[in-house]
Amino acid sequence: MYKIIGSDQKQYGPISADQLHQWLKEGRVNRQTSVQIEGATDWKSLGVLSEFSEDSKVVNAPPVMSGGGSDSGVNVIIPYKNVRALVAYYLAVFSLIPFFGLFLGIAAFVLGILGLRFRRNNPAAGGAAHAWIGILLGGLCGFGYLALTIFVIVAAASKR
Image (cartoon, rainbow, N blue to C red; front, side, top):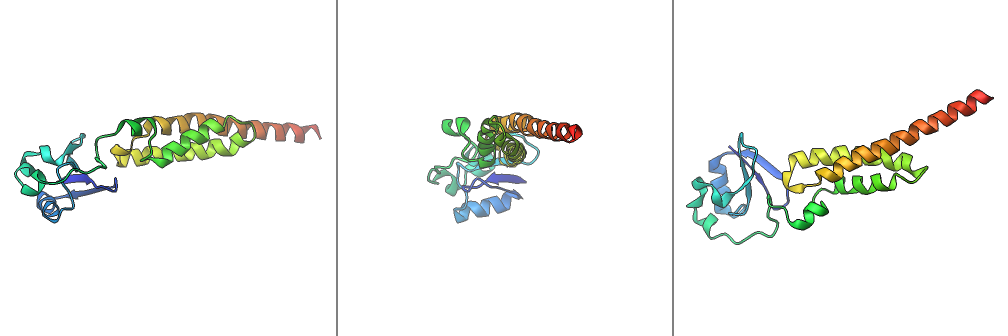
């Protein structure tokens, strides 16, 4: 059984070797398609797997620009394939602004968690560091400002 990452960067599978051979014949996958064998943790190009290397569709397939498992240098620095993590990062940075930080920080925290889940299901998406910054900095600022706001309200109410 196999899992693949399609040209739309979504994960498909598990699928059988017969189904994968059928997709090769239909041109739905090619030798650059990222494949994970069931039980393995690493992703490989379909063309390097011996059971598919003799298939003429794999050998003669044109290259695909959205190279599934291989990250480009840009995606490592700016995880454009994982928008949740990227937005979480920026919201976390802007959550340092007083008052706005309450709302931005909590949003960064939630989007950071969603970004990590997306990254777990789509390893080629990247963005783990951005998601963690969103969780840690956004959570610290958002929940810190929330605690400060509650403290100020309680202090003001007790003075009355």
